[in-house]
Image (cartoon, rainbow, N blue to C red; front, side, top):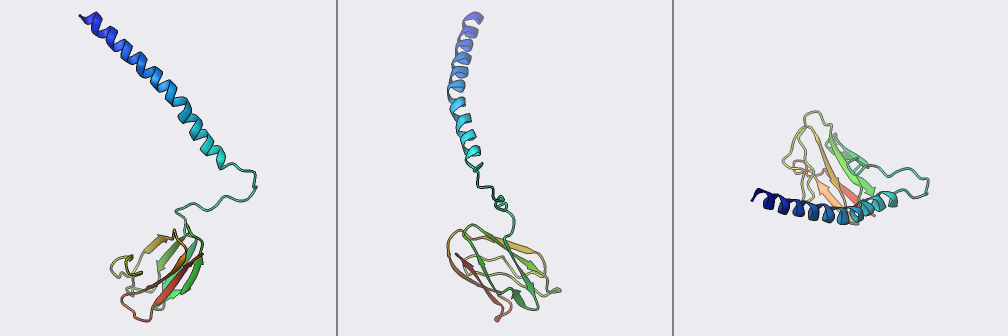
Length: 133
């Protein structure tokens, strides 16, 4: 009995290895093609990492500095609190940095073109706009 069970296991193992080999090579080739697709001969610098901020807005003197920024779709804006303990937040309406706080950063990546006004909930006159082209 032990011999019959081990023969069945060997056949299953052989089938699994054949299946793995037949599907592994195309997968490896697809991955290699994706890697090589990014190796064009443009000679330009690499684009910044997706997590890096493309534009920084500083919250200082009860204002967003600069109040209006322009980015391309896919770029990231970083807001940095630097107002000596004065609480602020960044509020786009449906999207917000959260409750007002006195320190920290908030990061948002803009996927679609448009004009995105925002404000601080604590200070009525503290407003800004992100323009995505």
